[in-house]
Image (cartoon, rainbow, N blue to C red; front, side, top):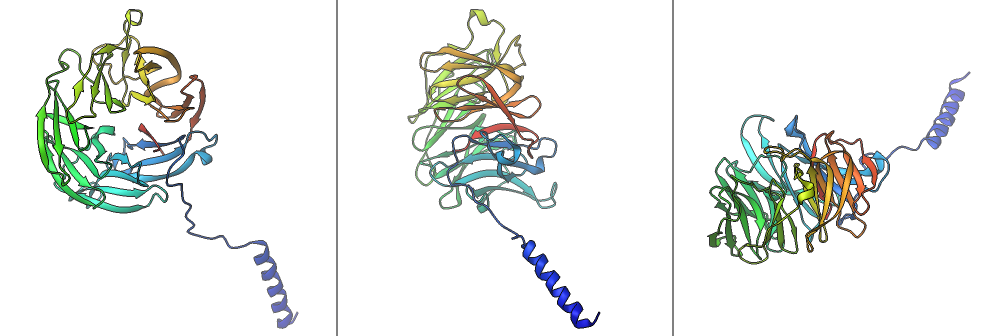
Length: 380
């Protein structure tokens, strides 16, 4: 066979191969919608056993298969704290980095992610290495002032709040909150923190983030008798705080200072021994409060979670339903729509999906990358 014939045959073979196998495009990036559907959720995986590698995982709770459920994720280094904007396509993660990975110089930042691309678009460096490196906590990072200001809870163990202008991408102020923790948006441009002596400590800010008023409320609970969960649900400006024994304190946060209303109980005489508990133990949809409950509660069982979720009407203060869980739950969230889903982080660290209306178990999400999804957020 001569050389010319070999070359012709080789060219014909190569033409056939390239026609059958089109080269795959590399580096393709798909975009998500800038506003997520109601049944998408964001699972905060703290990566409890290797906290350097935390993440926020975007999931479709309606989808049947793991591939369809998974939409993407962003990083959350060293158990970062998370918040998201409703008015802008932005998510915020307050996180920590060290110059040598797990040691060296510490840098705290607020990383700003685009919700459509899940790409970081900006960061604001937080001075002092102070931001709270606690378990995922909704009220450690909050937006106020029509979402212009982002408040970051600090714990060194001295407590304070850093004020960030997320529109201008800069730090405005740091406000000491001695003996008081977390951030509950109060009024137009203020916040309240919860104190161990049963009071609120509050601050009103001007448009530059400077303090124009400070106050301390009268005590409304006794932490030595019946401690308060620091995790209220907030509906129409009213925060509903629960105690370890199931007493509910409604607190109006819509004005400059919090106003505590009349207390009521989740537990009646027929429910003796039942108590609320869990990590993110409560959620809300409209006027319906969803809360994890466990029997045979005792002093110290407040993080136990429970086998049931009880549903209460916040207006009538009556229980509407008891949802028995497929697997013991430790955290709960509910989507914000008219046909809501309830997503429960169970004791095996899997995410179970239920109808929040009927209580029917629908599916378990995953498996996905998350290992310890302690808190699940609505995808605003």
